[in-house]
Image (cartoon, rainbow, N blue to C red):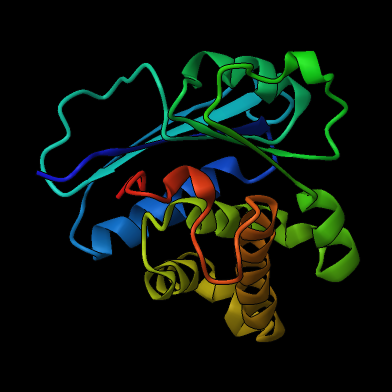
Length: 206
């Protein structure tokens, strides 16, 4: 039986964390994987820390809870603090490099720490509204947890009604996903097309 991939995504309300989790879960389900997605909102849906837990496996998923994630994504300083408990020696910890966080606040026992300029890249190269899709691409680039074509179909399913109104949004979202994949692979110090070092040498999570 294949390994279950455990993903934690966290950010401020309104950053699109749950949308990213939903798209990953949808893509994995369409790929025939077993999927468990649990959303957890802050005290307020906007203004509180929003956390999403996703597990993806080839076989049955044993428990809805887990202690350590394979990849943990934090999109704000409060999210960094909230998710530290899920980081261990085999965890890739990915966060937005624009977050005003001290080095000592980052998890010291992470297998790999991947800071990427997600917000800045979205603002300068794309559009702020596709920031979360750029993060989606970063997760895919770090893990390969679902095929890119499945992710595209899942994006289409979730945002298709917006694409019908403004077809340019389709290309914008797909470019954001591709850019996120590029950023995380570059930060992991790999050649174009390779997987990040944490998952190389038989350490790939799937």
